[in-house]
Length: 302
Image 1 (tube, one colour):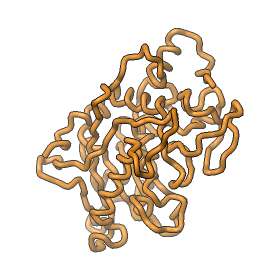
Image 2: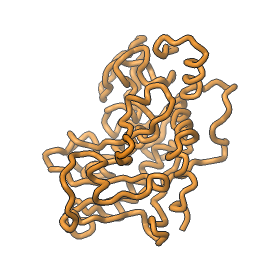
Image 3: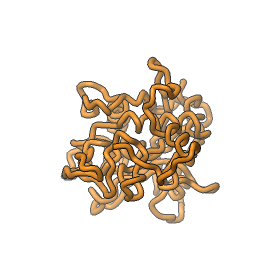
Image 4: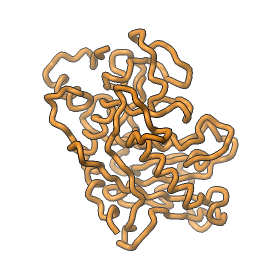
């Protein structure tokens, strides 16, 4: 189904759409076939004095496994949960690397542990502005990820959230775009960071995959809840309401794509970014000043 963008027929509207989610062969490739976008991340582990590997003070193994899962998903790696053979599914050629240098140029494993008992920070709510008071590295050089110890009663309810990039892509206003004095990054509940055996639909590390999609400019497939605008990607079936794990027919009678990472489906079902979603992320990496700067971060090199 070819979706209409706000009914626009002007050349400007068409140009913006092509720049965001086109698979037209005439469009210049945004990344060479043999090239990969590498992005540095720092994981700020928020804890309350527990020993490493206990409670909220997640083990190094679990953190490394989460980054591995992220790369399995974004690279559509064979033999992993992130693989699919759908004709509209693709390898994003985006990989994530735990930072090798800290902001002072010292060697790091990309894990920054913060004992909240030793830092006096006023409660600003569940948002990056609050967690940035504990730790915040230059967003032109690092993707800041905070793991947070939410109450156990929040398991399966509060998973994570992300800020998004402000660009000229259609629908960008639906993302959580930081203001001039706001912080930029991703928050993930420690229960849903990496793999675990919790009794929950979100236990295989896909919360970070989903939120990283938002961080790179992707919308939910239903976006603003309108059949004609939704996520501005033609290869995700148009839908005007949230998609969970139960199949149903979308706006044009097509089966919805319950395995898409940008839905709210169970972790075990999700395994696909579409080619148009990938083009949208590439556009952000090429055209958003902060996201583009990450590609040249010194944190990628020891």
